[in-house]
Amino acid sequence: MSIKVGVIGAGGMLQYHAAGFRQAGAEIVAVADAAPNAAARAAEKWNIANAYDSVEEMLAECQELDAVSIIVPNKFHKPLAIQCLNAGKHVFSEKPPALNAAEVEEMIVAANKSGKKLMFNFNNRARPESQAMMKYIDAGDCGKINSAQAKWIRRTGIPGFGGWFTTKELSGGGPLIDLLHMVDLAMYFMGYPEPAHVLGQTFNDLIEDKNFKGPWGIPDRVGGITDVENAAHGFVTFKSGQVLSLQVSWAEMIKREEVSVVFQGTKAGGKVERLFGRDGLDETAIDTCELYVQENGNSVNRSIVTPACEDMGRSLSAANFIEAIEGKAAPLNTPEQALRLMQVIDAIYASAQSGKPVSI
Image 1 (tube, helix red, strand yellow):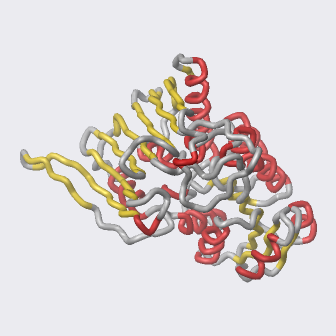
Image 2 (image 1 turned 180 degrees about the vertical axis):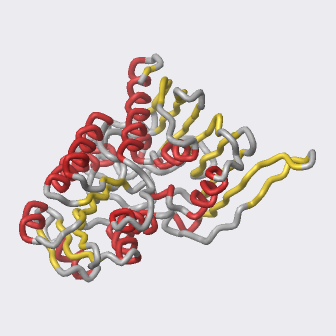
Image 3 (image 1 turned 60 degrees about the horizontal axis):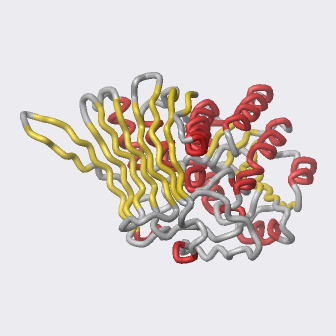
């Protein structure tokens, strides 16, 4: 029997969830969206049998559901995840896990009570480059990773003005929470150590400047709220002695968009990187994966060749959710890791507000 999945949210990410679930042998049997006719249009486009105008209707009428994926604005991740877990469904949610760490703790309680899987779309872990690098790390070729640098920076990448992305009540924050993937990937490579202290700063100088709008065609909302940062920088120390520095931005005076994790281990260093020719456009991107070692008195840089993956691991991440439910693969992420990630993000915002380091 194949896993039966329902999707909450008919937006653009549905295409990747659908591809991944089907790749893993699951069947998408329902889609729900509160926007008028959105679910019906998505059902027709993606060949989904049932369309609903509410989550309550989907859960009540589509009894065959085993799992649900959540593709909605950040504010609704926690309540919908808990609602679906309480209904006995496995849950795969888009990032970020929630608005803050306290909400993730509530989600963990619900997952433990239900006995169902709770996973998040940290899709950059599923990229071929990231998985190739993890094989070297897991094999001990890199030694202990003492330090890492996480970067996702854009020059002109504000996703519209006045919409939910720029409204803190709905999003939880700006690029730090939206582009959290490289912070997550760095911590993944480091073994997801427990954070100890965080120093952070955010900047909002450019957040209302229309010259820095991204290329995705997201309309501005007249009279909407824009109250998040356009850039965030931080430094994290872990109880293990490891350290992480980070730079995340939608709008910052840099040459072009860069997406990377660089790390320094006791035996080798490494880098996973995606360079964009134009901000936000995947077709202009070049992926690289490199390992840095000392051999026979020489500095040797190894280029690791991996298959192309234009969707940055999104479909592979969704497929892993299904495989984890079926016990065919280990889950690429855990709720406890999501909690540590949100603790770091919360602490950066708190440090920026207070001007002082924050202990976790």
